[in-house]
Every structure is written in C-alpha cells, then in structure tokens.
Length: 430
Image 1 (spheres, rainbow, N blue to C red):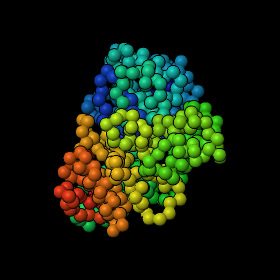
Image 2: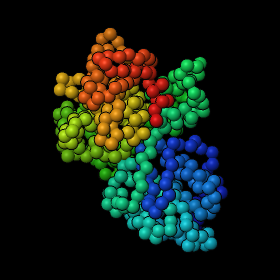
Image 3: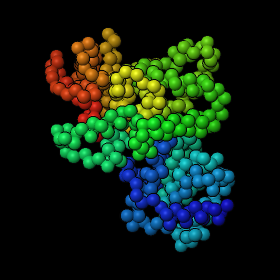
Image 4: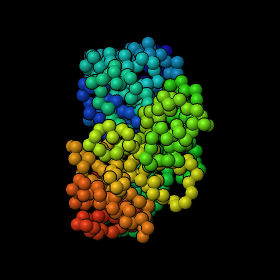
C-alpha cells in the first residue's frame, strides 16, 4: 500500500493542475486545522489547487506540500489504521523535510474511517499546516463537533456566486456595464444562472439537457452517498418524497409537521424518522432554513421558510408558467446572500404583511429586501406595504425591491425605495 501512496504523491507533484478558475475564498494558515466544507461538486478540490499554487508563488517549495485525494480509486481499500502510511511514504520520498514545516492537504478525507484521530495527532505535533475537505454531511458530523472542536477554522464553500459565474464564463464585468451594450449578454448569463445554478461543471455545459443530466447525477450522489449510505437509510421512497416536496414548495413557509400530515396515509411516516431525513438534507447543503425575525429566540425555530441550496436542483422539476417565477427568483436571492454568509431572516408583522429578507449585522437590522418577479397593478400595493412595514419597524431609510427586469426609484410614506433587476443587484452585491 505504501508504494501506491508514493505513486499518488509523486504523480500529483509531476502533474499538478495549474490552470483553474480562482474562487473568492482564501485560507489562513495557523496552528488550527483548516476545514473546507460544502455540498458535493461545488469546487472544493480546485480551490485546494488554487491555495497550493498561492503557497508556491510565496516561495514554499512544492516538495513541502503533500496533497492526496482519498477518492482516488487506488486508495479504495484504504483504512483509518493505515493513515500513518501517508506520512511514512511522504518522508521516505522527502527525508530532507523531516522536522520542517509541511503543508498537508487531505481531500475527501471523510471517506476514511476514524480519520479524525489521525488528523488530531498531526495537529498536536504543531509543526504541520493541515487542510481537510469533504462534503458538508460528513465533515459537519460528530468528528468536527466533538473530536476536533476548538482545533478547526471552518470555511463554508458554495457553488459559484454570480460574479464568479461570469468570470468562469470568461465574461468581463466592466464598470457601468448596466448602461452599455454588454448588458445584453450579461442578462443572458443571468437567465442561465437562475435556471441552472452555480455548479462549475454545470456551467461548463452548453446543452440544457446535459446540464439537467449532471444535476440529476449530483442529486443522486447526495441522496445515496451522503444520506442513504452514511445513515443506513432504508425508506428511500420516503426520502425522495421529501425531496420532491421541498422542490415543489421551496421559498415558502414550512413545517415538518405539515409534511407528515400531508403524507400520513401514503407513507405512514414516523415523526422522528421524518425529522431526521430533513436534518440530513440540511447537513448536505441541499436544504436551508430561513427563520422568522423575532426577539423571542424560540419563535425563530417555530416559524421558518425553506430554500434549496442551488437553483439548478429546482429546475429538475417540470416548471410551468413564467421563465423566471417569483419563488425561483427569491431562491436565487437567498443563495446569493447565503454565499456571502449574511445573517438573514424574513419578517412578518401582526397584520400578516411580509418582507422576504432582513439582513442583520451585530444584532441590528441593516437592510430590507423584497423579491417579486414583476411589480404589477395587482401586487404593487402588497409588495410595497410588506417592505414598508419592515422599514418602519427597524427605522431603515431605504429599502429594495428586486425584480426580473424593472428599474425605478420612488418615495413612499417618507421612505426611499429602489426597484432593481436581479442581474444588476447581483453584480453590485458585496
């Protein structure tokens, strides 16, 4: 086995990938373990390559860097008890590095049983810089929460945000582009992004059919590798019913009990089982909950809306009606804000007037955002009054309404309101 490990290490040194798209993330190399977690296929491995090249550019010799991907089929039979062989193989290849500071990049290490014991031992030696990656479901489990607590710096990694998506496509985002002819291809990319999301491999494909096929494969991997295999799920039909329910009812107020009630006759679901299944989907990064804003903490857990981690999954269902529906647009706005790790709530006052998003910083509400496909004569009053209710409640002088293609500014009841197309809002988002 040691010879196979040496071959893997040398092959990477000789053939390491240098041409890749740089993501808007970076790592801080300290004594703590850098843990990069995110949904499958969001680009974590290529991010490691990005970080490795940055280290080399700073003068770190490539021989002082160990990279190993435990998804390599040559390591398929690898056991946790054999992880010491990785160190032995490396220092036999580079004996001059014994006692030196070495950077270890362990990709998809969660595939190995008891990996955390090995990483913990390396950490305690205090001369290694350690980076580990894995899917959210497996690296957010008990190993990080217990065995490695206080020893990690966690970086939450996501599919491409819109600005990254444009760069990935080779599109030059010039200043004041919203006023130039270049806005038309920009709008075309925004339309693609809202329908198919930000997974890099999906963005590479031109064919809509092929995009959907890749997304279906990703969803199957989440279902079977991150949930069914990890938690020994037996009722796969119930799990798929939950996923279809979420895809049909995204960006809506939600409760697990409502699902149980709806499917009581068909599946006779056990309440604990259903709650567990929803929790597993949240762990993978497929599902996110948005709590209702309340100064009473328990209310935030009782009332919530659910969103899907990438719009591309939603497109797997047959969509009828407008190309950009209000809920599809709302889900996109949520994911863009979530990728920037904004602290978010939705708001509803005592009269039932609702505002889609509140952004908070340092225990204070900073922004209010309303999302609608189009402001029309029929919905204009409803959308504005929900936004105004939030602005008045938190003394916000300005609010935003995001639409598919409308743009205007006006004052209402002494407050400034900006109506902005979603593509323009996304390129301004920090």
